Amino acid sequence: MKEFPVFVPDGADHFGAVITVPDSEPKGLVLLLTGTGAARSHRFQLWTRVARALSEQGLAVARLDYEGVGDSTGGIREIGLTLTQREAMAVLAFARRAIPVDQVAVVGNCSGAIAALGVAAQTPDCIGSVCILTRLLMPSTVNRIVISRRGSRLASFVRSNPLLHRVSQPFRGRRGKPSENVTISFHRALGHSRLFFLYGEEDTDAYNPKVKDSLNRLLGHHSAEERARFELQVLPGGSLSGFESLETQRLTIDTVVGWLTSCFGITPDGTREPSRAAQT
Image (cartoon, rainbow, N blue to C red):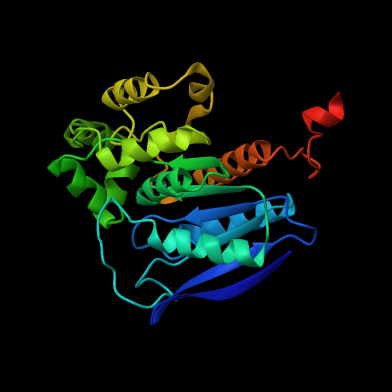
C-alpha cells in the first residue's frame, strides 16, 4: 500500500487530497466524502482507516478536503446540510486520470452522503454509493439546532446520560419535507448504481417513521430490479453521529469495507469473483 498527497487544481486555488493505492493493480476506485467542515481523515481518522482497509482488499481510495478546509485553499462557500459536488467530482476525475479503472464507488457521511448521491447520479460507471446518516428530509428549525450542536460538550453530556438522552428525543425535530436535491439524485443514482443507507439505532433525527414512508414512496417509482439495488442497515449500539465510541467506529469500518468489497465482487481473500461468463 502507498499513499500520495496531491493538490487538485481549481482555477487559482486547489483541493488537497490523499490517494491510497494497493500494491497490486487496483480493482476499482472509492471516493470518501466527509461531512461539512471535517478534514479528509474525518473524526478519529475514520476515513484514513477505511482507505487503508480497502487498499488491503485491492481498491484505490481518494479522500479530500473541501474548499477552505484542511489543505484546500479558497473559502467555504456553503455551510449546512447540503454540499455541491464540485470538489468531489474534480478529485474523482483527477484520481481516475492517475489510476485508470473501469468502476468507481463513493462513500459519504451526513452532508457528505448527500454529495455522494450527487456524485453517483452524475457518474454512469459508479457501481455503489454508501450513504451514512443521510438526511432525506429537510430538517426543521429544532433539528438544525440539534445537528449544529452535536459536537458540543452539552450534547456529549446529554448522550452520556441515559435519562437525559431519552427525555431529549421528542425535541429533536422530526418534521420536514423531502429535499428535492436529494430525491433527484436518489432516483438518478438508483437507475444504475447500488445504494446503501446506513444509520445507528439512536439516529432517530435522521431515520424515523416519516423517513421510512418517504423512502417507500421514492422506491415505488422504480422497477423491481432497481429497488433490489437499494439496501438499508441500522447498526446496533447507539448513534453514528460523531463516531464517538470505539465500537461504533469498528462497526462502521467493518460494515462499509465489507459492503464495498462485495459491491466490487471481491472475495474475502482479496481476489475478484469469477464473472458469469467464466462460470458458464
